[in-house]
Length: 81
Image (cartoon, rainbow, N blue to C red; front, top):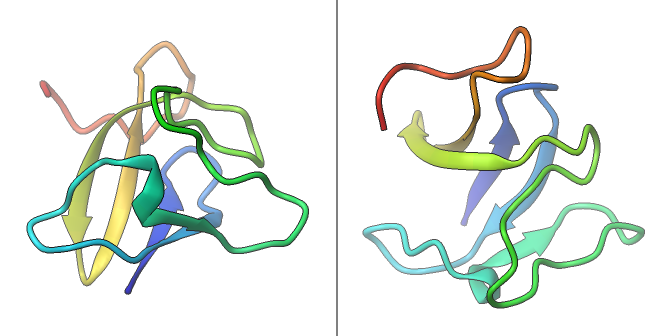
Protein backbone atom coordinates (compact mmCIF):
# COMPACT_ATOMS: atom_id res chain seq x y z
CA UNK A 1 0.00 0.00 0.00
CA UNK A 2 1.22 3.46 -0.92
CA UNK A 3 -0.23 6.87 0.01
CA UNK A 4 -1.41 8.94 -2.96
CA UNK A 5 -0.63 12.65 -2.65
CA UNK A 6 -1.99 15.58 -4.71
CA UNK A 7 0.99 17.77 -5.66
CA UNK A 8 -1.23 20.85 -5.91
CA UNK A 9 -2.75 20.93 -2.40
CA UNK A 10 -0.37 18.36 -0.81
CA UNK A 11 -3.27 16.30 0.58
CA UNK A 12 -3.19 12.55 1.06
CA UNK A 13 -6.26 11.55 -0.94
CA UNK A 14 -6.10 7.84 -1.74
CA UNK A 15 -4.26 4.69 -0.82
CA UNK A 16 -2.88 2.70 -3.74
CA UNK A 17 -3.47 -1.02 -3.18
CA UNK A 18 -2.49 -2.35 -6.61
CA UNK A 19 0.43 -4.27 -8.05
CA UNK A 20 3.95 -3.13 -8.87
CA UNK A 21 4.72 -1.58 -11.30
CA UNK A 22 1.92 0.92 -10.69
CA UNK A 23 -1.27 0.45 -12.73
CA UNK A 24 -3.45 3.55 -12.97
CA UNK A 25 -6.79 1.75 -12.65
CA UNK A 26 -9.65 3.02 -10.52
CA UNK A 27 -9.98 -0.28 -8.66
CA UNK A 28 -6.51 0.24 -7.10
CA UNK A 29 -7.34 3.59 -5.45
CA UNK A 30 -9.14 3.65 -2.08
CA UNK A 31 -10.22 7.02 -0.60
CA UNK A 32 -8.59 8.02 2.70
CA UNK A 33 -11.78 9.67 4.02
CA UNK A 34 -15.30 8.23 4.12
CA UNK A 35 -16.93 11.28 2.47
CA UNK A 36 -14.80 11.04 -0.66
CA UNK A 37 -16.00 8.89 -3.49
CA UNK A 38 -13.78 6.24 -5.00
CA UNK A 39 -12.71 6.78 -8.62
CA UNK A 40 -14.87 5.05 -11.21
CA UNK A 41 -13.47 3.07 -14.16
CA UNK A 42 -13.09 5.29 -17.23
CA UNK A 43 -13.30 8.56 -15.30
CA UNK A 44 -10.25 10.85 -15.11
CA UNK A 45 -8.48 10.97 -11.76
CA UNK A 46 -8.83 14.24 -9.87
CA UNK A 47 -8.26 15.50 -6.34
CA UNK A 48 -11.36 15.34 -4.12
CA UNK A 49 -9.93 18.20 -1.99
CA UNK A 50 -8.93 20.90 -4.52
CA UNK A 51 -10.48 19.53 -7.73
CA UNK A 52 -7.21 19.46 -9.71
CA UNK A 53 -7.20 16.94 -12.56
CA UNK A 54 -4.17 14.69 -12.70
CA UNK A 55 -2.11 14.32 -15.86
CA UNK A 56 0.58 11.97 -14.58
CA UNK A 57 2.08 10.19 -11.62
CA UNK A 58 5.51 10.10 -10.03
CA UNK A 59 6.55 7.34 -7.62
CA UNK A 60 8.69 8.96 -4.91
CA UNK A 61 9.69 7.75 -1.45
CA UNK A 62 7.11 4.94 -1.42
CA UNK A 63 4.37 7.43 -2.37
CA UNK A 64 2.43 8.16 -5.52
CA UNK A 65 2.67 11.89 -6.23
CA UNK A 66 -0.12 12.85 -8.63
CA UNK A 67 1.05 15.50 -11.10
CA UNK A 68 -1.35 18.25 -12.15
CA UNK A 69 -1.41 20.24 -15.36
CA UNK A 70 0.71 23.40 -15.55
CA UNK A 71 -2.50 25.36 -16.11
CA UNK A 72 -2.87 25.34 -12.33
CA UNK A 73 -0.75 28.04 -10.69
CA UNK A 74 1.74 26.66 -8.17
CA UNK A 75 1.35 23.16 -9.54
CA UNK A 76 3.60 20.20 -8.97
CA UNK A 77 4.23 19.84 -12.71
CA UNK A 78 7.75 18.47 -13.00
CA UNK A 79 8.28 18.79 -16.73
CA UNK A 80 7.31 16.80 -19.81
CA UNK A 81 5.21 13.71 -19.31
